[in-house]
Length: 250
Image (cartoon, rainbow, N blue to C red; front, side):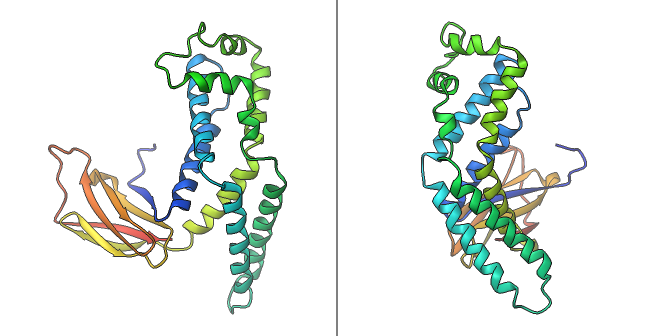
């Protein structure tokens, strides 16, 4: 993280769908951070991220949810085209992007199936829950795979990442629209507490100055939420009587 950053954005989902999407997004960010698998530590970090990603995918009908939301957003944007003072070119561009993502996602193979069927991933995944369970005598196939030419491993890595693009592009488009659906507004907590109505919101976003070294603990749902602000140093840190921050309910 850059030393120039003065604020940090915290996000909290207000429904189960958004909770699942944010977890998938987080897993995809981790997975895509690997440009190469060139050592055992790198391999174990990558396969652990892949394993968590597969577990999240298995908890719901992600493709159906995304396609439904893509259609819903397209219809809403189509209505915007009839509003005065709307930049129709930008709105049309977004509609076309959503439609393209929906078409690609609907035609793609089952999401994550290429990862579940991969023998290297399957062998490693079985051992990750065992402390120290990925030694070369535990998973000799991984030891062999790591000894293959780097170009061979790069090609396999790229095939794994490419298979996730239909999901990744659709999810990124939706989350971008949701995050941009509301702007940050100034707010003030009293004695480390703040609450308000969510008005059918899906995602709560908080912007707090890093210098405060304070983080939010959020509880709530689509109609109402409450925020408790806590110091990073639980023993010596303090929360100001009034804490200024910014909030967006998307």
